[in-house]
Length: 246
Image (cartoon, rainbow, N blue to C red; front, side):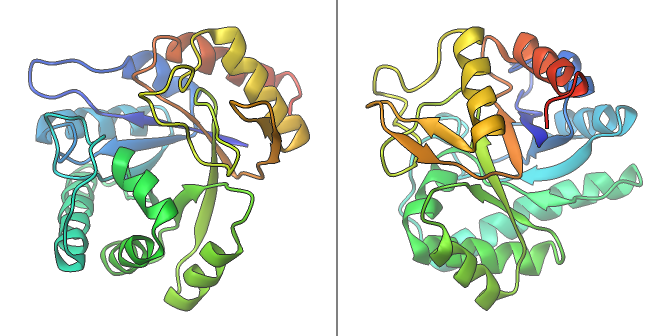
């Protein structure tokens, strides 16, 4: 299972995450595109760091919410959302072109990601935007138990998908991420994160916050770059995989 991490989320003089420590240990770097985080120079540096380490580059667009780090839902029109996504993907593609790199996939960020997983009309707009702005690139979506409607919509739109599980976030009984405002929504220790990853990889399941076990069949595993344990966890997971984990 490929490891992905949200990267390039610093902005100006403000630093977020430990990109230089994490990048050598991952397979996919989801690079912020300037709306929820990042800036042109940060994007340039992050693309260069990904290329140096042979890491696949993905666009990580979000709502225009620098103040809230893209974690607040926006009430917007389909036209606005379609345009915001095209703008952000285009920005990263331009920087990649300067470095003879390419955008290989798209993974929406934060509130946009969570909203599209629960609102099929938003997901349809996201799929259309990604297909038009990044032809051939798969869209990363959450590996929820009941995913047939998502697969059907992707087939209708004509876009490939990558299903994603989360290492450091708690799940609810429907297979969605628990709201960050709820106690226990983010795992607080490296051991808890590693235990959840082992279960996802080895059993294809995850335990919800209430104790229920649900199916999680994923292509890629997310480690949040802004988490306090990101560096230690991703290094441990890389070593675990090299030692024989599937």
